[in-house]
Structure formats: C-alpha cells, structure tokens
Length: 75
Figure (cartoon, rainbow, N blue to C red):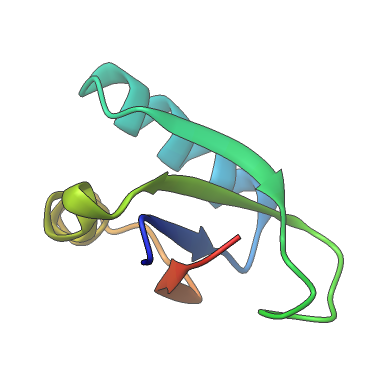
C-alpha cells in the first residue's frame, strides 16, 4: 500500500521554499534524494504522507511554487 508522496522540483530554491512553507503549516515532511525509480537526475525531493496530498498541492499552487512532479511513492 502506498503511504507516501514525493514532490520533485526544477530547482533547489523551490525545494527550500517548499520545505519552509510546509513546515510552517505543520505538515510532516522529509527531504530525501530523488529515487532512481522516479528520475535518473541527482537532486533532492520532499516526501510526505499521502493523506496530505491535496493540501500540499493546494499550498504549492497558491504559493506559485513550480514543481516537476507530485506523485505517490512506495519505498
């Protein structure tokens, strides 16, 4: 069962901005390396509980944060 989602970004600036905003809204997140099953590129993504998916998406959109993907992720 998929319990986590990840967000991938085009820039580290957006990772840090998103991390700050989500923590301010008390959403439990973790920054992790982008899984190789998602992208071969090096980089950092944000992992969070799938139950917060819609809320996180709305926060990204309302704050005009550019992201590459927001998708379920199974470890």
